[in-house]
Image (cartoon, rainbow, N blue to C red):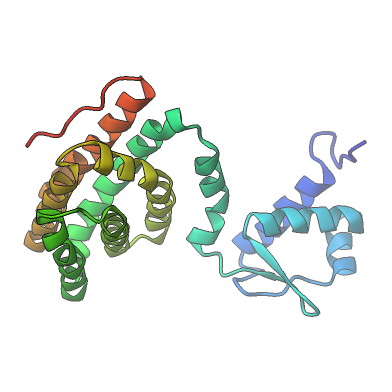
Length: 246
């Protein structure tokens, strides 16, 4: 039977909340070593077994890491690592839920594009051009290389998310973009002209970023991602996926 410190929280919860409070107040900074087990257990008023359970829970969420022979430390608290549980949740979604994930992705990336239009550097614009230029030939004619197109798609969107200047936003986008990449590959294979349409949309997004126009960047990104969202909704409903306007 689970021990309770106040009738409502388990001792593991006490450990999690206690360590979290120590981080929030600055007592434990990123990279800091936790106090020795005996001392920390006494301070939090829990058994050493419960302390280990709490530390294990915080390790699974990316807050703590145990180094063999050195002790337990606060991680760098990087958003990408702390959002690991969100990635797990996204991966557990059924195929029919992909349209909802894409909808959330669209909301986030539209804002990221607007922010990026005001912050993107010349070097980042050059890199974005390189990513798209590599696909000008393959997309324009001949047998399309869908794998190369998907890799370029991920790189392009990651670059924009990074240029937005918000690490948490970029990490969330990366989680959702990675989960829907296979669905985007299905669309490129199933819909004639989808690859070319996507490439043109990417070009329009880049043009808006070059102009430094946040509203144009938001609009172009929204249109681009809505096409994929509609495709996924059509698949979930057993309907023929809508074809993009040519």
